[in-house]
Structures are given as structure tokens and as C-alpha cells.
Length: 358
Image (cartoon, rainbow, N blue to C red):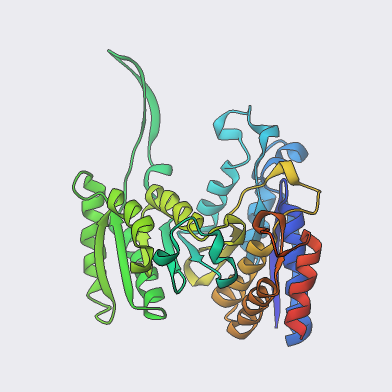
């Protein structure tokens, strides 16, 4: 099979981790006789430097024509002085909107070999963690009406949180269908005791749940959910929530696994088109030093194979290779501990590719 992938290398360590991920895809192509065609496009700070805007129309057009998008990372202190609507990170919001990427899938998996890196007590996470946060990505407060106005207390700023029934329904369906393939439990997170938008959210999610009688649904307020994630994370299977709450909870869930450098993500549209990227940032302080951890990006392409291309065996090969490399004690600097073997970006990628072919 032949697949066309738009590749956004991005800023900082983005090009390095993307390079290792595409090498892994090439190894999969060799093993299973697929063909992956990569078309590089600009977004983020590098696009600002090259063409004066963080998300050129040419990038949007190429991404829409591709089968999937692979993104490294965008941003860095070089562009921190730019106005908010011109900063590299705005490219992410633009891509989500233009590509219709309404569902962000972020697994929080605690690898056995990295259990000691988890900041929680051992007895809390004994037996491992495997949580998926399903975040609504194109609605809510980040995309709502915003502005400033004068008040008797001085200038005020506002951002409007708004959700429609259809926006909630489609993300809820995504969560329930994912739960059916896992442990058949969905936890919906809102603030229905205060927010009208959350009351609609809860009502629609409850209605969708009727179509999935084999899946258990419970509801938590966002403050309680944040507490429960550190108190008893094993109670969760699939968490579904809105944009701003999902932004917060997915970062919290990622940190309890011990290393944000290990965690992939997928942003999906209708028809399984997706953009795949690591959870971590651009880390400009280590760019070009062969210290970046490429495993989150490599695991992101495994998600690409599974969710967009339907290549489950190939995805399994990548995930098992990562686990095998960790089990052998190889570590990039961000996850290195005494008694393990510290290696660089390129070396860890090479070890993973060798495991896939072994």
C-alpha cells in the first residue's frame, strides 16, 4: 500500500524526532512492503522565519491533500515577543480548525521499565496505568468569541465557552467507541454544577451513552477529576472532556506516567484522517545536541498506522520494539537513571528499528 504523509518538522527538536520517526516508518515499509511518501511543509516558527506567517496556505492545502499529517513541535523563545495571534503555536489551532481535527486522543501509558519515574507512590500505580484522554479540540473557549471592553473597573477581557449538541455528540461517540475496544468505561468530565455549557455537555453525553449499553458511564466535575487522577488513576479507562479541561487533564495524566517525552497523540477528523504529534514541546535548549527523546514521535506514527491506515500489526511492531528497547535498559537523557545506558536520539532510533526487524 502507498500512503502520502504531509510532514511538519517544525521547530527546536522537531526535525530530529521526526527524522527518527520517518526512519521507523521506512523500516515498517521494508518489512511489510508498504510505501510512505513524505511531503515536507512549513508551520510554526520556521514558517514565520521563511514566509512571515506561522501557517501558510500552501501548508494547509498540502495537509488536506495528504492521507495523514506528522508534526514534530512548534514554538520557542525566539518568537516569544510576537503578538499572541502571530506566535508559532497559533499554527496548531489553525491546523485543527482547517483540517477538522475535532478529537484529540492522548494515551497515558506507564511503561513497566519506567515505573520508577512515576511521581506517585508505588502502591497507587502497581500493575501499571493505561488511560486515554479524549479531548474535544475545535470548540469551547479556545475557539469562542473573545475580546476586550471597558468597564467601571477598567479594561476587561473575555473568552466565551460555547458548545453545540453536535460538537458534544461526535466527541462522545469517539470516546464510547474507543472504550468498547478497551475496558468499557467512560468518564465524562465537566463543571455542570456551575456552567451552562457543561450542563448541555452532560445531557448530550448521557444521551449518547444509551447507544452503548455495554459501556459504563460516570461523570466527574473537573476539580474532582484532577484530584482523582493523582489519588486513584487506575479507576480511569477513557476520559472524555471539552477543550480547556482536556488540555489540563491530558497534561496531568501524561506527567503521572513519569515522562512527557514518551507520550504520543493523535488528532482525528471524520473518516479517520489524522494529525499525529508527540505531546512534548520544541525544547530549543537541546535542539541539535542528539539528546531529544524521539520515542513519543515514534509512538505517534504507530498511532497513525493504527487509526488512520488501519495497520494494526505494523503499529504493534513499533510499540513492542519501544518496550523491548526500554526493557534492555537504553535511555535518552530525559529518562536516564543510574544503572541504565544513556544513548542519544539517533542511537535510540536505531535500536528501535533493529527490534522491528529482529
